[in-house]
Length: 502
Ligand code: ATP
Image (tube, rainbow, N blue to C red; front, side):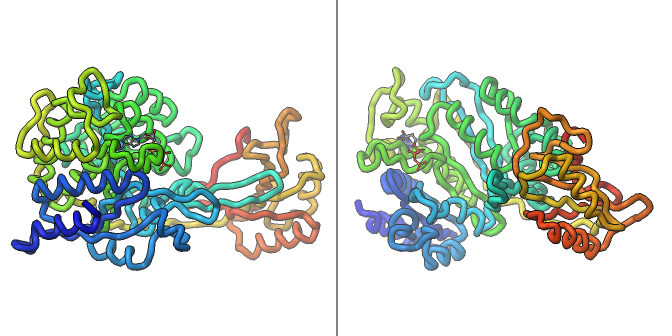
């Protein structure tokens, strides 16, 4: 059946008795195996009588190749903003620097701040070393190193800015606690690296503690991301809900999906205050595209999450239980082939097998039960309340220089002569390590020097014009200034970290 026919079929199922409960959703078939698994998923939704009407959009490879470097056209954005619900097949971003990832563009443009990825074992039908694994990773989706703000600063040094914001932390952490509460989960674990990134990851954990205090019914703990990932890889049954920032979440989501046994099984939700997007976690698998052998389960389980989101828990439950029954009946696509496989099926046949089991419940697996509580469906839309502005005092400046001609001591001597009546040189670091005063000859230095000037004793605050005066002295001396960072205190607390070794 062509895509057009399938959309028509779904929409026709409802047109005769279409009523106001029907929910419009936007669907993109995607690239590679996308059309095959999306067609299979839509067939199941139609057979289960999901109360939806679909709008189809084209995104991805064809759109990129037609000259739209973003991979999406204006009319597709309009559909997404109209329906606010998006079921998306996997898409390819062509290689080459001219193309931005459409996945990242959609998430950030539509404010889809929470990536929700359940990772569950289906042992013994899906081989895994961790049969008791049943966890959900809630990954912040918009900020961190994914802000995409990168610069080349010197011959040798490149920079990527890690941006962590209080509103971003509050939204994702509150979402994680609400998710735990509304899904009967007992514990939320925060994963950070705040022993090293004291300000950015420190904020994430601080907000976790603040918001966690409002959820005394939920157990809470914290892991440093390195040992946390190791524990996740060896004892995933220790975890229930994990909340973490964007890059760590990206990495541990794939570890967890792999541990559960098959990348073809997991779906994910990307939730925002206005729009939500549902997709399989795998890519478009070009190696098996067009062969009708792909496993449609990832997208189908994402569609189950979508149905709960739009308030159709009854349909979600019917499909999810039929899917569990299909798996335990040994009806498997090629990727799941094992001694438990009774019938090896194609993508289409798998969808037919799920359809044949609609209305039945699994025997070996526990049947799932979803409720149409409004809390379970929606993003947590607690409006962010900005805190009262802190008393912010300018106390110094870090001046970053590009130079190779001077050693640390020579550079310090030079800069000492350029000090002003307000600012004196306090420290020089190279890649964050203090190299003056009292640097070690063993420390390797690049061409990138951070020179910290602080206000002189007896002064209480600086004006920005004081910094400009210092900068004009430095540039007058033909030193290459890459950038500056103002050093401020906030309510008396320093808004900057010490140099390593300071
Ligand atoms: P992309 O660049 O789009 O991420 P990829 O091939 O690098 O594509 P995946 O698409 O995630 O990454 O595929 C990784 C491997 O898993 C491939 O061997 C693929 O065939 C397999 N795979 C992925 N999804 C499925 C699926 N739904 N059913 C069966 N096998 C799958």
